[in-house]
Image (tube, helix red, strand yellow):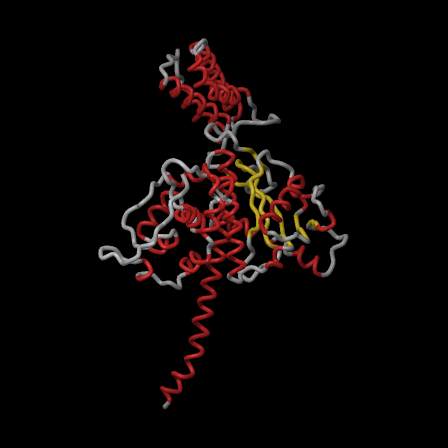
Length: 448
């Protein structure tokens, strides 16, 4: 059913304190809460709810929790715990009186992510609107953008053949035990020892011994796969239960370290990809490629992110530019005049190729374009802030949809951090102006 509306009390409560009486109404979170158009967000999400059933949680509460989580780089549990004792968090999510207990279910954030994950771009769009209304961003700043890609690592350990083979043996043994499938031998104890010894031999650079242990693990995994296949033959119910785990196990057993093509790098996150960005410290990262679009100019409030999107399949950067620019234009409503990219976008399919300038390019680069191209590398600092101050450095959400949600919400959190910083700056300027206006009069009184 449609989300329920937060009703306002017509009179005070004797046993509860009103939030507007115990907080500073000039606080940046209070000002930001009043600037966001919650009614527009509610209207955008109306089609995702039915007219029947139990009413969903209020839109302002759930979206406010998402914004607070990614603005302050908190986990789901941390943002709920902080909400209980932080009156500014409660005001931001639409509460009128101070709450001492959680009025909603903690699992609501997971349910809402699964339901509205495809439309969280509206929060990025709303952050740009609020930035424009507060004076932190001008519409002319949206015409010239910088585009770059980075890697959003998945929450997995560094994948090795020994680790993956051990996990496959353990998971098949666990699943067989849960469904009453008797195995000739589970190999749990000897497989753990072999995986441990393979890691020790690799550290000592004794690769022949390491390969012997990996071969031992691969042989034992093959025995378990064949044993389970014989035991569940003819049983459709067990066949459906073991279908996907057996596919994963067979893939892990036959894949090699330097083979080409698709590989499985994680049992619980099969969508993980191996991406090499040419970094000396991290030659390979395991996650998904993410495209970010920022303003080329540093605006009054900072360099804002205009578009963010996960790019599964590790596509070539140049082949993604056309789609990224079209989606950026839809979000901002502004025609893009110039685009600045790095050398990885050579051979792009942008609609206006002469308006795209690559780093190191000489032809057609002069005057203002040359100065703006020199600012292309400023997007690297934005990516660094999204990773250190946000959740872009490690994604804990599940599946392809979780990859895109985490990328978009990391950009939303970054934009709102800039807006909060801008609101604090405005408040300081106002206070300084008021103090400068009353200071001479007070000094005259003291002199007299």
